Length: 409
Image 1 (spheres, rainbow, N blue to C red):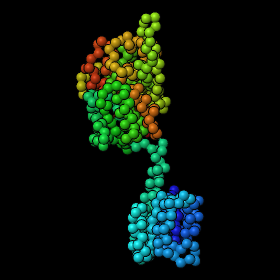
Image 2 (image 1 turned 90 degrees about the vertical axis):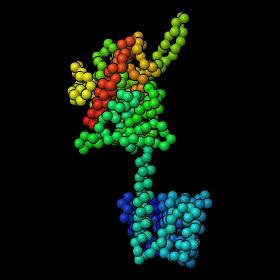
Image 3 (image 1 turned 120 degrees about the horizontal axis):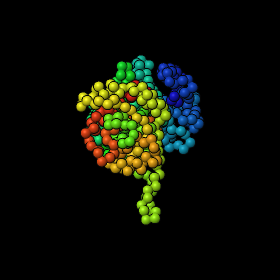
């Protein structure tokens, strides 16, 4: 775990230091070495790099020579300037001589190293050394684990509207707390989804405006600041009018793309748009779990019964399929029909899902798994109205909440 070099000409003292080191479970006998003079120390440090050097301050140049009081300090200076010696990451001086400790202290202070008074009559030095070793082991573990293996939160939730989308998330039972980060205007909320012994850590935030750029920026910030295992988009979307979805139904994207991506050109005097979409799919594992829920109609009656607004007579449904994202609110059936030419199974349109998927796919490691669980509030036509937005935001948030507790790891 950590490599240690002990430099001490007092064999009994070196043995006692070794005994302290052996009390740390993560450090094995092969991880530390003992040398007795400066010549051996130079030879060892020229060949190996150590996490910690523990040295006496009175040291001989070679065994049999008279130890010199400041030899340890001189060796540290040599390590600082040498081009052939590997400088240890941490250094601790350990001396039994009070006068040597007082003379050497300024030299150690300059480099922020520590001197410990070695005294066989007390266990103070033992305790201090143990504390330092444990700190180094913990730091090394965190360093080794800080690559692509560690998520911090379980779920990050992104919404585009404060009301009703983010309000529906904050209405979930999660013991929400406000988080404000330095130099960041976004207000985050952290909480916990609980179901018996299962607990999921959650962080949620709302974008400053609608649209893919805002959703992508917020998603990137959530990933960077909180490292969630999953990133979820919740809220409202437009359903395809001639599809199966009805108002309030849950729309889950199994893929998403920017329907505005392509080329505008003039052909025979007519303006032509040639789409060039790049679709990002939902995780296969997540899709399988969601398809299972869809077939079982799990949670739907429960969600409808929990709704406290105007009673909805029609049974709530879940639809899984492509959701296309664009830069504007659509109130034109011709646009929807044009988009469907490139994806006949299209179930919905929104302004954010592709931005969330793109930000998650292109984030640094560990990348989260992205999903979009929205609900239909209109049909992207001239009959567009806002009276179903609250119900749709509610069903979306409730389904995400139940799915997370039931199926997310």
